[in-house]
Figure 1 (cartoon, rainbow, N blue to C red):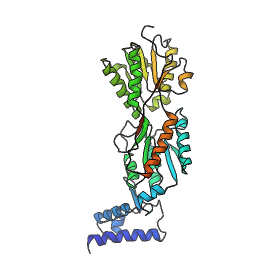
Figure 2 (cartoon, helix red, strand yellow):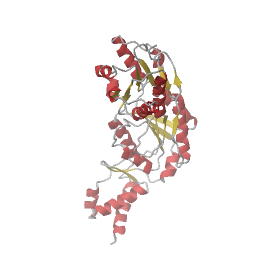
Figure 3 (cartoon, rainbow, N blue to C red):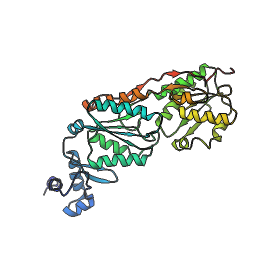
Figure 4 (cartoon, rainbow, N blue to C red):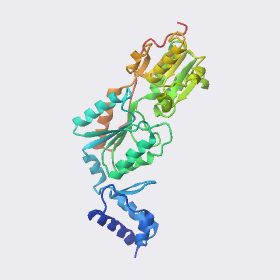
Length: 362
C-alpha cells in the first residue's frame, strides 16, 4: 500500500470520529505515538496525515501541547464571517486602557460585532493560556491584542502565528512584537521620546537622564528617541544617567528607588517613561527636598489626567488614547475585508507644555 493511501486512512478515520460525535471541537487528538501504534504506521505517515488535517481546517496543532479538533470550514471565509472580536489587553484599571478600549468597542459594535475583552495583567503565562484556549476551542474570532512584555523574547509568538495560519485577522495595539509580521496601531514612540528630550535640550539642559521600562516595547522605542535627540544636539550619552525599570518595579511604586536618585544625581532634567513614572518621581523628589523644576526638570509621555494631578503640572507628549482605540477597531475591520492591506498606523504625538520643565538656571 502506498504512503499516500496510508496517511489518507488516518485522515478519513479522524473525520469519521468527528462525524460520529466521538470527537468534538476542542477535543485533543491522540498523540503521534498513539496514532502510530493504533494504525501500525510510521510517525512520518501520521505526521503527514495531521498536516493534511491542519491544512483543510479540521484540526489545529499547538507546539508542545498537541493537536485539537476545530472545524473544517474554509479558513478565510470563516474568519470573515465571525460575528465577534476578541480583545486582549494588559490592564483594566490603568489610566490609559479604559480610554482606549471604550471607543474600540463602540466602533466594533456599531458595525455589528460582539466583543469580549480578556486581560493578561502583562503576564506571558496568562497571554499563553488565552491564546491556547482560543486555538483549542476552534474560535474564529478576529483578534485585537496588546502584546505582553513586548521588549523581551516571547514563547507565545508561535501561538500568534497559529492564529494567522488559520486565516484569522490579528492586529496589535499600543505596541508590537518586532519578531512577527503582524500589523499594529500605536503611538510613534520613537518620536515621542525624541520630542520630549528635544524640548529639554531647547531649554538649555545637557545633563538629561531618563527612566524607562525595559520589558515593554514602548520603553525601547522611546529610548531610541532619547538617543536620537541627544545625537542631533551633539550631546554625549552618559549611561549612568539611564535608569531601566520593569513592570514589577512600577507595581511596587518605585519604593526601593534610592538607586534612581543616585543615577540622576548630577542631572538637571529627566525624561520619564510615562506620566505614572513622572508622578512617582515627583513624590520621591518632594520627600528629598528636590525642587521641581528649580532643581530638576521632568517631562513624560501620555498627557493623562496625572499631568494635572501631579504636585507640579507635567510637560508631556500626548498619547492618542481615544483616537487609537477607534483607529485600531477601524483598521481591524479593513483587515477583515482585505487581509492584504497594510493595517499598521502610528500616531504622531503632540507636546503639551506645563510647569514641570524650566530653562536651565531659571
